[in-house]
Image (cartoon, rainbow, N blue to C red):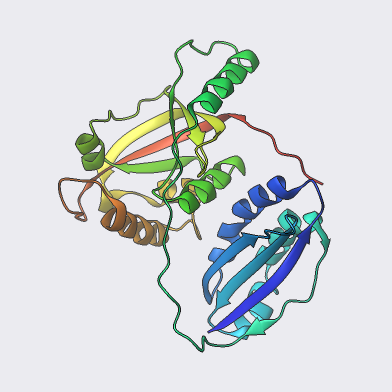
Length: 266
């Protein structure tokens, strides 16, 4: 395994927009052959600098595989306009010291005041919205999941999601219905988008089809990827009274994006 590690400098004033764009671009690199994982850390002393680290099976997977692909051109289009300059990218070999365990933070609590203000802006911009504020929630079970899946929605890639029916029952939550509105939160508990559910169906896990898997927009958007990721998610994070089974009922939901909190681009 090799590690790509580079310090990137973003144009002043575009840091927040860059971070949003990077989250949208993350699924591109995550679906590459030989990809093992990545992280982006913001500088403390220099707030416009970022440390990007990507782990690959081999140097060829990065240099020839990813950089020689059409996906790399999409990656460049999303990110390179933000950089003051693009520096050389060095690579490093295996760890000389075993890495310590990592902690995956949960999303922050919902910022209720920000959600209330967002709902006011939605009602001012869109006719016919009810006075009662809809539920506000984020995707996944961690900050990273909430942010990365939200960015897929904002990029127009993700138009579907799935819930375990047993988990909804255990939490006392109702099954979503067509026409229902939702406010999407990021990992910091801040509102970022308004969506409307357009269709809902309940099917066994092993009967979820390729069309729905593609609508969720994750990874390579195949059914095989969807099954692998969702089984692992429900086995790891599921709050259900029954253990995962291949015929577990899954609530497959489709939605459309109604409003987005805008971010500037260079």
